[in-house]
Length: 637
Image 1 (tube, rainbow, N blue to C red):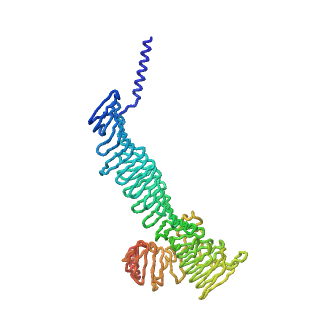
Image 2 (image 1 turned 90 degrees about the horizontal axis):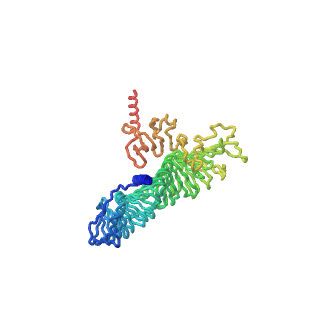
Image 3 (image 1 turned 90 degrees about the vertical axis):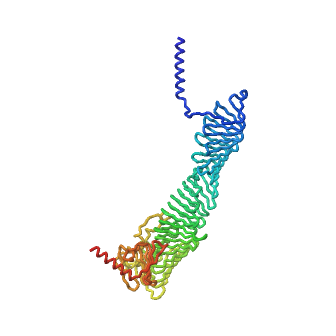
């Protein structure tokens, strides 16, 4: 019975041992012996250590393809390990060399631990060297990875990197640094928490909060890369580029330090603290050398040099540096701006910080309190934090809204509006001045309308915007007063009257509201002044344009310019935007054209920067136009 019991126990124990042997992990890496290549003296003292062999003088060991050189060493055959002392050197092929005072090598895991005055040299494909200095270095031959953990320094042909912890792969040429990282380049210094660096491409990959300092500025970033060879970079996660008194910020930045060019994408902001101006948008461009800036895609400019902030939006914004004290802000297409005391819209605008003048072009409309101004162009002159005066050089018209049905109106050739603080105080009109105004009774009632017409006019208002005084200048001033019940609808407005309150920006966010061009005012000038006729004015399309000398020029609707300006005194015709002009029996399309019929010359250009000169007279124009019209009729027949 006892024998049977013993057999059963033996069988169960054997099964357990077999099962454990199957489940135990197996080291699949084939272990090879450490070979002694040479040594001057070999000794073995079993009493001191029966596992240790001692070697002295020109000792060389080999493990696979790795050679280890030293002055003296202990070899432990059973443990497949060794200790090396003196001038220790480890060689891996002909590209990796590690030097130190002490080495412990474990052949089981192929780990070399070099200590004291460690220097690692890795030969690059271009024969240059990457050198690592540290006091403690571990090199894992299996993973081809060496790392230090008590401070180290890596030097290549371009840069020097230091950190508390670092690792380097001789095979991939990639190094990773952590804790107090510093990359020193002749052109800049990079400080980081975590950094990856390729000794092959010379690209530093930013993996943590980092600062890059150079003579031209400072960069703050927490993610991205920097090519230390050509000084280009891609910076992510709301990185900042500081250049002098300017700061460029974006969701992502492309920066070329050599060219001094920065590009920002997504929630871009360029701030100039010296000029107290900021550009924002979803795309931005900046040149350090010329201090030129560009913004588009929801572009907005904030100008706060005058105390109150001006918010301005356009499809495209440009900031041009003139000198250390002045800049030009240029806005193109769909301009809308807001400030607490002034609002406006136009097709394009220019603001010069030197003379504090804001120039509005292309169907401009300007509002202040209950006042509205429009004309062919508007110039606003600032004084400190307020408006000094506004100048409307041609086709000027001013409207003051009393209530929804009554508007004071002023119209003429040239208008200047003077402000006292934030309020309009005085208006002067020079040439073909007309006015309509409603005198208010003491109780605020409106009982009559006054109409005047003269060569010159001056109009004064009090701080509440109420009419105070009107002065007409000869020759031949005309005026009449009409009771309200006797007024017709035509009597209530001047010819060019329009109120565009629906287009007015109401706050800083409303500047991004889209409006259609057909909603803008149509500019027409009084007789005897520059005649500007919009291309889509039906009265002009069906008619003819009179050139100097009473020459009638037929303008075809599908081939007219967006606008034509005739200046009789200068004997010139100017067209802008998509103008079609006959020359050499063809139709030319251009963005800008300037014709001098008297001199027989035509200037044309694809853009206002470069212009070419062509001999072309008004008689040639008419003759060739007629020739093409005749050919078109023959084709239709």
